[in-house]
Amino acid sequence: MTTSERAKRIRRPTGKSALQTELVRQILGAIVEDGVAVGGAIRELPLAHRFGVSRTPVRAALRLLQEQGWLAFDPGRGFSLVRAVPAEALHAAVSGSAVDDLHRAILDDRARGLLPIEVSEASLMPRYGASRGTVRRALMRLADDGLARRQRGHGWRFAEALDTPDAVVESYRFRIVVECAALSEPTFRPDPATLVRLRDQHLAILENVEKLDPAVWLATNDAFHEAVAVWSHNRFLLEAVRRQNALRRFVERSAFQRLSPARFVQSSREHLAILEAIEKDDRTWAASLLERHLALAARSYTDRQARDAAAAEAAAGQPVSRAGRSASPARVEPR
Image 1 (cartoon, rainbow, N blue to C red):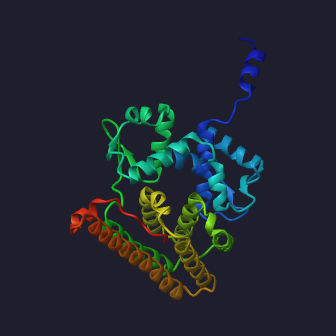
Image 2: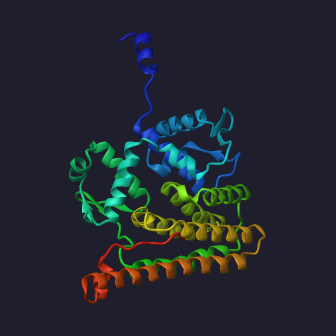
């Protein structure tokens, strides 16, 4: 092969790969999760380490984000964020992605109890009509979120989910402890740009709640609770909140359809009140509002569980045991 032929082969244009599409989603998610402000640096090497890939596909994904107008590149400084990333952008970034579609399908099926706790790539391929590479990337995304792990010998194992009423209530109590503690950290410092972005996202939800997209709500909800942890600058509190958010993704998508617009209005208004208290640097009041917000969500959940149990008893004509109630998939509230 001549030098010119080799050069042509190297420069041959290629389409956007599935890995690049996935990295675009992950990088946008990381920007939101980390509360990167406009003008903040976006560095290749930390992202490569974070997502377990080499710098080459990360650089390609960053170039795509530059073309889309999210990033700027300076030869001396590298990439930087040029505009805030709204929750809608996370949804749009993965539109049409086979990995994203499979990721959602696995989450939904696991939430409905249609998948066992242990699976193999070979068993998922025919079930979803997907290639091994697509299945593996979807499972790796679940692993990144702490929702699955590769077995040492063979296959994958899903994380224990919030699949019983007791587990859901325990999760709410744990979140009250952790998230209120984040507000009391001496290193707590909110990012003004992120605070404004979160407020705008919640106001947009209130303006169009009747046509609320589940992906937009879930991304906004997660971003709010993670932002409080990010602003604490306590890595262990942040890890705990992210872990709880990940566990809830197993059940939140399937629960979304059962909730009324009034619940999303109430939850959004409570979030906005907490953000207002944080902006005024009244963290004691913000913690009180946050504790009440999570406690009300827990109470709403237990009230609905009781109503569902009563309806089941009436339909069956006999009492339903506590064990029977616990065996049904848990449904979580907006929080």
